[in-house]
Image (cartoon, rainbow over all chains, first blue to last red):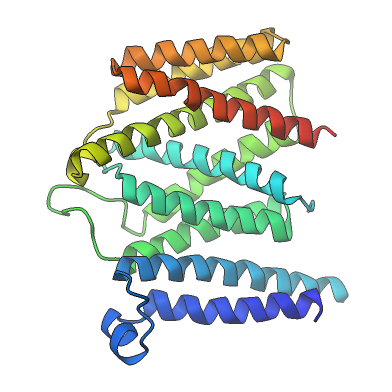
Length: 70
Length: 241
């Protein structure tokens, strides 16, 4: 797997994780998705925002890979 | 854009995010907005991670700088919007309105520009470089000292509302300006690094004692001064290679 694909996959995975943990309701996370990890909601949002940062920077890196190829 | 190593990115991000946070704390103290240890920790983690990953994966420079100084405050605003309040809004004013995003971007920009131009690129005259170095160092020393102080009181009292009322604008400004002037004189006129470091640590001890009259905080002042001094010296030796 080359670096471009790695960064793209990282952006997708952390992006989805970040969206789930930041924007979804606590009850939905706990009861429906079973993804609460025994944490408080603020901790979920903290995890989510960190994942979003990783996703955005990884996506920017992916865009740079595409731009440099052209 | 320049590619940077892991350690360089780590130190670069540490100095800039810490300076940004303390500049931001000054505005909050001046405008009676709560400087709350939990929010400070959240803010530094978010800002640090945004800057660190950008520096490591994309690089340093104008474009990566603009990218990270917008990303950090915007993500922090998202945290504020979605997280539950941990301080009573009827007593404390928090920096949670949308306008504070621009303040955070501005202080981040100042910290990034000063560090990148005067410490990283060594632009300008010697006086300007010394002023930039002492500016960043004063804010980082103040930051480490503040973290120790707020964490100590938080552990002793377990009361976030007491901790949020601890800092005052006047004493903080006195401490930072004293450290800035001392640092500027030392960096500009003393070439011997060891002598400069020893004098700086003694000065930090004196200024912390004068502002706080707290023996434990003054004792920790050695660590507050030593950590940034060693890290800055290490960073400068790495970038000059």
